[in-house]
Image (tube, rainbow, N blue to C red; front, side, top):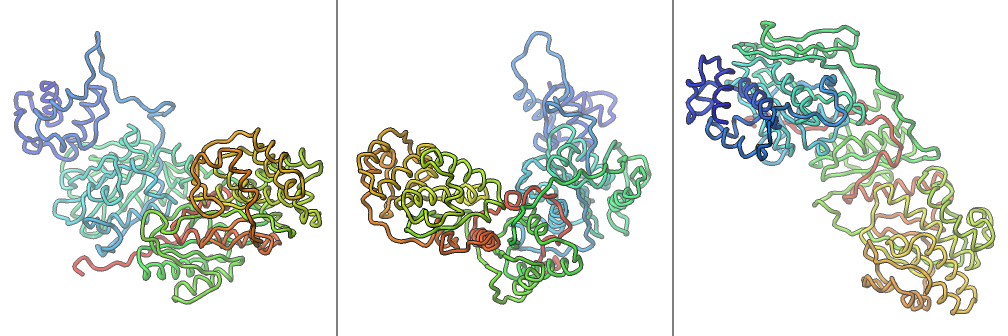
Length: 636
């Protein structure tokens, strides 16, 4: 192995013999630079059939150390082994074009020192953040991102490792010295990293005295699958060795020309971008294919939208609101639902949060003004998240039937398929036991709802459907509790009873309240299958129930004697309210607004908001303002 390392090192350095490679000297002392190190890694990967990191030579800095490391990676020898190149993923085309999904530039070194934790990653990392947001990419979803940075040793600025650490990336991190490698080598290495499956996403950047430029690249199939924009395609790339002086250009990064070429491709012209002398590195670009039509999105009947805005400080939150308000005023055709979806699906949620629940464009602009000015608005709720989990546990309380007429759910039934599916499945089971269509009872025969034999099952159907909708939207409870018929719904939500058994128990409960002998309820409860709860379940008194308690007929017999208080709500969510119930809204518009307000309160307290689930799968990227950094000069 040592002979192989020496031979390949001599090859990339142009030495006449491997004897010139001293095994104890560092590769840097031998003359291996940023570009040569990657070429050496590639040759060794081909020879050994191993997947090797781009930082291989820096991690194992002498031929002796490197050869020892490679030996530890090799499997036990087999008869007549043969070298093989790194295997591509199943179904992956190694010649597949690479998409440029985002670009961004900056011409100053001012940066926001409070945005990234740890050692300052500087303006290049912030410019990368702007590029990610412009493409609708959440960096936290792409831990295997590779970072490739070109900069001169004469330029002060963060190296690739620092940028990668700021984001928490685990992909390759390579810094190129552009005094001996052209800046276009950075995107070339990014392309190679994607094609070798070392990275799922790649960031190529250049830093000069005059600013920085950033490109985000991804395999075309991955970009399409995740709904990222495709600005241009890289169909070929190459890099060679030799000195270049492009980093000393006073006009800005050399990658600026590449970005200009990307923008020119909107005219349909195939172009080639190359280094200053046209020989050291080049990328061949081609026009992006037409964007696929976005999947149908939005939900009929959703009168209200919840737009979420967040930042790392109160000042930045207000600045974000001002930027979004100005953006919407300049684009009167931008629908609030489209904006709400993009904000929820493509923006990172920071500690300082606001949710704006509105039903019109004018109401949204007014709420943004209130947020920007630090004023009150009925459409606006603010909050600060101080930890990774909400400070207040989410307890869902399922109410008892109170003898009134809970006309509820038609608006949510029309607006959300998960609600409709859960409601339909539940009433189908209840119909068989009660001998009449429960959907008609719930919506059109309010007098029957006063009778417990119908009112209890009707309430149960609405509670189950509401719970499944909230679960679909990301509101998963920490604890569950309920009273009377609500206790049965809570047990089903906790996994103690499946839906058929829970439906049978709630029908028996309603009949018991209507005067059926207790023995019938005991007989039904005794033949059901009980399971330990998957979500903590509280008893009617609020104490935590042991796992074995609700998983027994005796528990339910005991609970039939509990006193029930009249409740105005079908399902209570504590501080995350408003609550859902018969005393609440009954028209479709008010029901969906109540739901949006619940989601907004949950979001500002630290719970996630699933934009795709709420609005449907609209196009993930939208031209919206990127983060409102609070930048200061580097010496400030």
